[in-house]
Image (tube, rainbow, N blue to C red; front, side, top):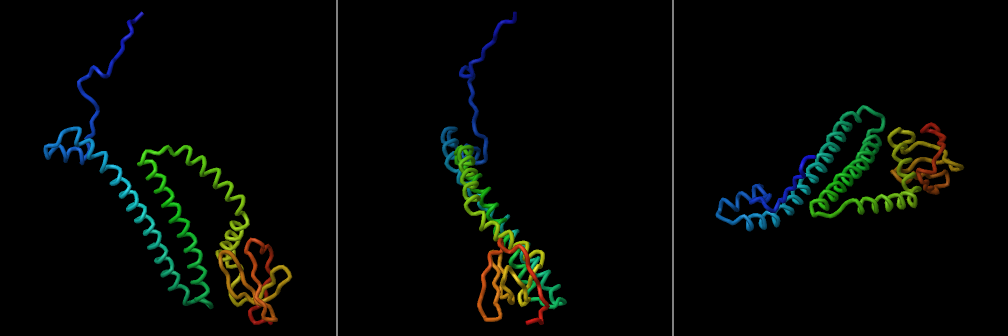
Length: 210
């Protein structure tokens, strides 16, 4: 049998040392290795957090620039449509919702990265966030359904402001459309507010009908 060989790392005359920029800079100015390591440990985490925040801000700003370019592009095309203001309003509503989702995702990831830099164990946090998210999603499923319904109503151009439509047992003219609700005004002047998640069928009439 081969003899067993054991290594005792404490017998080696060297230890792992940091070789980062801050460590080398302190060493160049005549500082000791222990001082260089202490300064680097104090500065490294704040710099990493600042870098993460700047990077998240830039990525979020790219989303805003993209939104402006798309709106500008559609504003040039909208002049040839019958209702350019309505088209621009729809596009702006959709892009604003997507931009909010984009921004929340970017900063959510940045928050997790910052916690990781601070040395926190993310496994329990992610487990708790998953449970909390599932609970909130179950409790707010009607709200989510409303926003999804509004998103597809706007994206698919199913109805437009000024159209005469019938929703459930109410017939009236569309006053406004948002991601959450659709507002109708009936022949008596009464305003009806419908959650978009409850709109399953829509009957449309010509714009010039009473």
